[in-house]
Image (cartoon, rainbow, N blue to C red; front, top):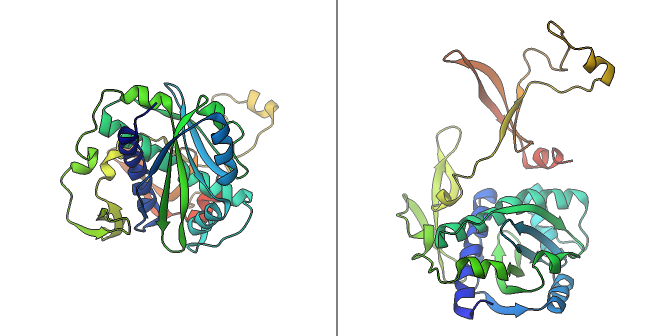
Length: 307
């Protein structure tokens, strides 16, 4: 089991990765307070899942898992913030809410894992992300029976100010045992020209204006986003999409022609990890096909693409 000092350091590093991604995705300056650390038995994990019914949890390939738990009301506020830019509270989560929360949970937990890798130099990989709005029934199994719990206050503007729980399985302690975190991990890298703000927790949060598609620097991003910038994602250009009977597919051969349901002058879709993120025109660059981006789809359209 982690000692308290090591657990606080690990939890702070993980949470920094999570909230850096939230800031980057939502264009906000979030904050979180000092985590309160304690060990949790299987019974205590079950109680936590009742206190914080929404859970985004994933396996660690080397064993164990990680989880971020929120109250239903705060999860609903975050979902509406992603979908509409306004935090609205409600007592239940629908499929649209869970879809938007999964879209943000994947890179958030990935940012936390990347921060651990950067700080400790250990090989940590996340897989099998799940989100649920009714408590995580398999949370105990995912944590392999027990875990270190970090309870912390946080604020995401506009309109979210609550408490949450971070669960780190004991297997992560085995990975980092005897390994000291670097001074601030990736956060010790020299920042780009930036705006430094002090959060309610008293911690400095350094934001960098990254260029947008028009070359203007008006998108606030954490200066240490380089922690996750080397994560590889599959990008696919989709010319069209049709359904065909098996008989027609079996009849295909050299010279066969079939329509793909898209006009010649229509833009094609750009998907990242099978999620529609942009559209563009086909161009030729150095005798190779390319795409000139003409449109970045809205958050709502990205959520719709998850269905």
